[in-house]
Image 1 (cartoon, rainbow, N blue to C red):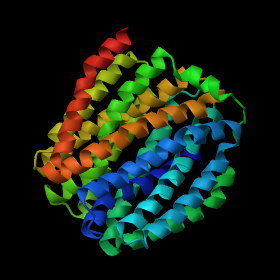
Image 2: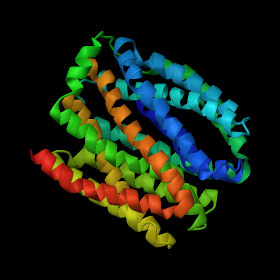
Image 3: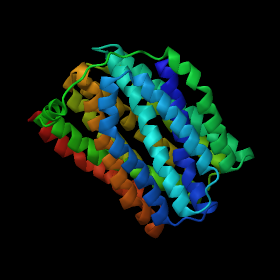
Image 4: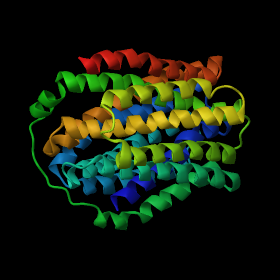
Length: 369
């Protein structure tokens, strides 16, 4: 059931994350800076909630947080469907980001806590379902937007979330343990964890570039319709899901983590750069290469968290890692949103891909040390 919930969460995220800029620009006529601010606020909310939600998930059964997240996200989607001007939309978007943090982090906490010492195979299944949900969501979003308005699509997902509430009874009842906040700090402020958080922050800045620019690039440069964008992104998500599954099933332990990480950064960065060439087949091919890198990074992140932190405190500590990723996404959104609107939507993708490549010497030296 945990796998099903991460798939459902991902379906909603993928539909909204990539199609929302099209609605914000074309339907509500928001500027590039306003779109960047909205995505930055989404990241900022997750930033504020990440550690408190993680600690709460250590102290209470995490499925309680799942229910709160479901209710809050459904209510936010209904309100977003009615908002027509920037400031009301921004206010509701703030609540939307908080609710998503409750929903998503509670699932990760249950993943780590339900089976202590989980193998890469379990993480591979979880992330394969996650990316399968992304594939389903992007295809569903493209199909829905071919027949419905964007506000009606938001209402559709709100009803879907409310229907999931009853199924939360089948989620794992994780063990509650109280830990001092000081202990979380002692866990996090070690050299291996700080190094892990640093390169992950820099890498996740490219998620901000994707959120603010990718959908608009596919529409304006490649001329794709919403359904075309859905098919394009579904192809990438399928590659990410397959990479996560294969890593968990066959590849884990075959190479040292450093080799996997270098391969991940190289494929992710090169894919982001070369996908901007204005040819659909060429762009999609390199987007698939990018997906291999993102799939490897996803699995390396989960396996590293499991290795670095004790299971009783993994909620709060994984919340701090989520906070790191959110900071990276927030920084990327604030940087790349205005840049894409001013220079062209391909430039955020090129620059963020170059940054991923520049991380390779950093992680080589750091992990060797």
